[in-house]
Length: 218
Image (cartoon, rainbow, N blue to C red; front, side, top):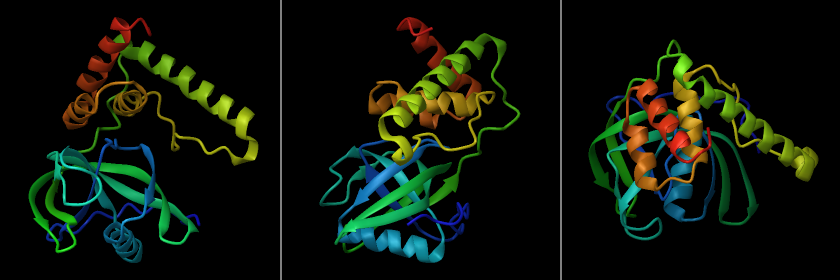
């Protein structure tokens, strides 16, 4: 079932943000499908949908996704629920989109081993930070990759194809281009996390540009 709109409500400053520790890194503007089956997280998602608030996706520093609460990395990304479905009892299929980044100030653990955090928001990448002339090749290469993925998906899946990229496509924005490359490239999770934590978008894109050159992608 699709949501009629994308909620962009921030968690109240004095509230605790529910955390979803995962073996993945969510970037602002990214699309993250989730299969939720643990009762603690199904309850969390239901509460978020009722309140129309996001939850926080954080990379696991130590521990596992299932079972006891994992130790999270200090910086994560808000996940806004854009749609959901339940194709079998007890399994919730979520569509989420990355919002703004946040820094964890304090965590607490519920009786069901679910984590919550007091957070501070990290300033979003400025829309005025356009792709520089030095890195325009990154944007052009990304555009080719996106078009190839979408064309192949439509050819193979037809009307069932769902793009892994959320609109709008912002090939002129350094932060957006850097974030999409960070999702696509086969880099270690720890490297993705460090790029997520890097607050300066042009610097993030410069690192991506260097990687693409070193691996003969550009």
